[in-house]
Every structure is written in structure tokens, then in C-alpha cells.
Amino acid sequence: EPEVTQTPSHQVTQMGQEVILRCVPISNHLYFYWYRQILGQKVEFLVSFYNNEISEKSEIFDDQFSVERPDGSNFTLKIRSTKLEDSAMYFCASTVNTEAFFGQGTRLTVV
Amino acid sequence: DAKTTQPTSMDCAEGRAANLPCNHSTISGNEYVYWYRQIHSQGPQYIIHGLKNNETNEMASLIITEDRKSSTLILPHATLRDTAVYYCIAYNDYKLSFGAGTTVTVRA
Image 1 (cartoon, each protein chain N blue to C red):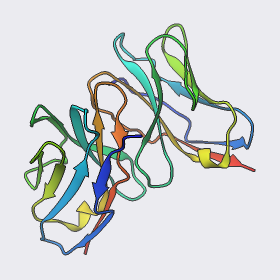
Image 2 (image 1 turned 135 degrees about the vertical axis):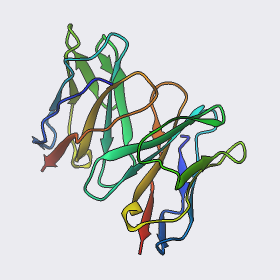
Image 3 (image 1 turned 180 degrees about the vertical axis):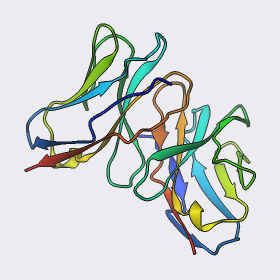
Image 4 (image 1 turned 90 degrees about the vertical axis):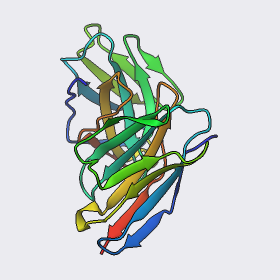
């Protein structure tokens, strides 16, 4: 069964450093997403991506965040200068047009 | 997206049916009702969705009232592995908005 793959599963970084979270969506999917979940809180929408551009972003997705689909398979989330409050699980998702499939997440810890 | 209301938590006995209610009284005509679940801190998992008709798949059944203002997710034979947070979401714009969901605990 096809699945969304995220790497790494865990990432520890120092405050102020840049991190790149990687995702391989399901191959025939057209819409791609990043969500995050701070420990004990709700799953929050960050950004959606379609046709090689951002289609919608939340207030959380400020200038420190960027997304890219550098080739036909990868979808990345970059955080330029991490802050302590960026510590969270980050989930990638993809869909054709109905149900979204989520990856298992990257646990980002900023120290 | 229409707002949905779910109970905060519920318990269920293993092997019994679990009925999870959801209110979405402001749902619009083109919004679907989607159910996802999240087991521990894993990625959300799609369960089922519907517009007007009742739906069934290998995981669950979805019963939507005729006025579409509420729905019920039915897990026919709950197992311990169904312990999770269940999210009811009404949407139609390719962006899921997760609420707090219902924490379902299946007990042996």
C-alpha cells in the first residue's frame, strides 16, 4: 500500500539553526500539506501546496518557513532560524482530491 | 469549514460497537463529513467520509442524519488497537482543520 514517508523521524537542533524536514508524498497525488502538533495540543495546519506553488498558508507559516518541491518526488519544509517554540511533531500529507494520507511525522526538538 | 462538536472522551468495551457522535449544525451543502483518527502521536489516519448517504468500509460505518446536522461514526467491533483520538471534520476546500476530537479508550 502506498504511503507518505517522512525523514528524519527525530531531529534535534540548536536554537537559531536551520532545519529541513523531508517528505515523499504518494506518487500520483497532487496536493501536499504540512501540519504540526505541539505536544498535547491540536494538529495545526501550516501550508498547502499545489501545482508547484503555495495555495494556502496559516498565520503560523511566517517568513521563517518555506516549502519546496525540488524534484518530482520530494516535498520539503524548511525552518530558517529555529525557535524553542518550533519544537513539535511535523506531519506531511498528500491527497489526490479526497482523503489525505499522512506520514508518521518528524519530531523536532529545538534546544 | 463548518464547526464540529464532539464529546471530549468516551470509553468502550472491547468487542462492542463504539458509536462516536458529531454535531455539525452549520455544515453547508457542499461540505463533506470526514473522520480521521490519531493513535498516540502517529500521523492522522483516514477512516471514512460521506456527503449525504450512509457509508461503510472495512474500518467503520458513517451514519449522517437526513438534515446533515449530525453524524455518527460506528466502529462495529472495537479492539484495544482502536484506542485513539477521533476527529470529525466538515470541509470541502482541500484543507483539514482538526479540532480537539474525541479520545476513545477501548477497555478489555
